[in-house]
Amino acid sequence: MPTCIHLKQLRKTYGPTVAVNDLTLDIEQGEVFGLLGPNGAGKSTTLHMLTGLVRPTGGSVQIFGQDLRSQFVGIAQRMGVLVERPTFYEHLTVGKNLALAARSFKAEVNLQRALELAGLSHTAEEKVFTLSHGTRQRLGLALAFLTEPELLILDEPTSGLDVEHTQEILHTLRHLANHAGVTIVISSHMMHEVESL
Image (cartoon, rainbow, N blue to C red):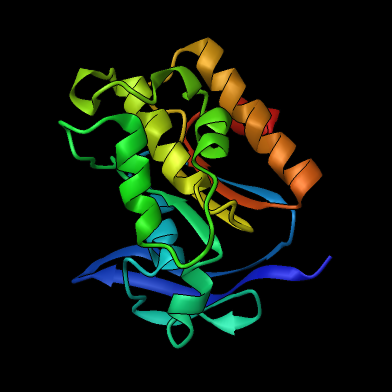
């Protein structure tokens, strides 16, 4: 399989604190790759560097064979991302939030497909301020699925979900990797979740 992500001596420091120290790895296309570790281990920082949200102190990031920094716009259009806590327009519906996000993408999007993948088909008309934490998390996943990306970068995607919805999301991610060749990079401190993928 071709390489989707190539990290070479990736490093991030915040003053004297070293968050990521010379990380080198390759992730193949269609692979599900888990970053495991306790809080403060550098998982989120690594994902933020992969998405271009944080600039590395040193090293390089190549995605789809291209340098992330110089080719960011083209790479970002092929990537779906869920990092931190996603924010939404609270007084708009789930569907309208997705429709607004879709306008910012140049690619065609399938709103219904994104809702189905995230298990939100029945909540499209609900206003965001009425949603539970777990449902908001699934809306963040729907945003990541919106462009049917080749690469998904997900930071603690099952945070706040109950056991049933966690299993549904993990099953969906495994299906996307197996049947659509989507590369998935997922961070978690829950080893059993990553093992199930």
